[in-house]
Length: 554
Image (cartoon, rainbow, N blue to C red; front, top):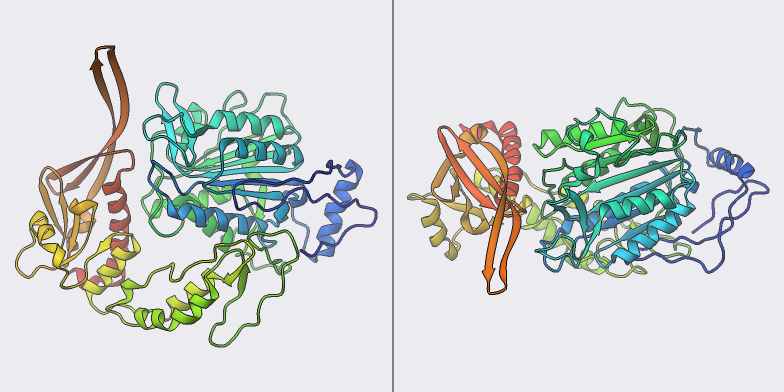
């Protein structure tokens, strides 16, 4: 990796931090030497001048560190496939000079194979090395310990029945981050998991987004004498709500954050503060009817600028430096673009080049057919699996394919595409396995089955949404806007009596209530709430389709 311009007399920082996509961080055996304090400010200002960017009041990326944890695969819990892509994309944006510009050696990324010890050691090293901004991000399953209301961050070995097994207690992570990062100017925490609002003090958990509070004696606050220290935390949900991740794409909270960082906010000025980003992400999630994020700060950290605003129309910054996903050596020059395959190459990620060249024409033919487009959705090709290998940029390939996609001309084809994008099983015409589903959903005559979820608890035909629980509810597609959802938590106590005595256990379940007209149907669901999750993805998508093609809903 080419070195950045250096100020005369400034010491070279040892390369003791490198990108770690395999779930661990490596450090140099040499002892880390700190740059003299008198030189730090001069080096930072000189870097801004030599890179040709206007000086903006942002956290100094050279003196900042980030630890990103994304657990997408579990042995006993439901997998979260979107988490892996989300943490990788977030790391890429943090390293982008048009966003923040963290050196890649200052970013550590953990995947599903990381252990609690690996994470804590990396947090300790990063915290000790930080003198400006220390950022910690977690995405995965969040577990709630009911007796103490303590948040546990589930790792790959998390136990289905005991929240403490295979999990990292959040207070342990927070305490270590505060001790190790005592020299940091500010600390930023981002949590995308169920019950993540437990990380905010009780007085703050019910606070609406943007109404930030100062709690100097608990949770994310500091002690009263921490006048020079600032902290900011943002969570995907409140203390009692679930967080959601679709079968395809980023988790909803992480996706909203990525969208704001990548595209910026029009009219918001050259930089974005923590509060401004939180408000914009919350507004976007609210339009999708998902839980609004919660946030709190200490010493007005939320008012400070964090990143550059990509949507700002002022003087342009220098172009972003290439940030490969892995590796420590200089990145070779990307292959020249061709007219047939006009895609950039990236190291350690992306689609396999050979697969794209072999299969691209077939995918384009599928998306070009309005009746078959639902069969071709991202990811379209196999991806690169080694950190030293090169592939085509997935975003560019997907965008190229989507530009060739033909809009469905029939409602049934549009409905199939909508269901496929939400991860709901689609039934092609003539599917022989639909007879039992037809009976369960009460399909009549020529009514056609289109798709289903949860073994038929939710079924879509060409005319109705059919929900089956203790009774059957059939809702015409033209009346879906009159449907309302509500979820109530329920604690179930189980008592087991043996010759050794009695044992009790508690589990959390959710009652999902669907109301249409004067009827209400209930689903008793586990903590994953699959029916509610499917409906909360399906109903907004149908609202959007109704706005675009109202003639199909008359």
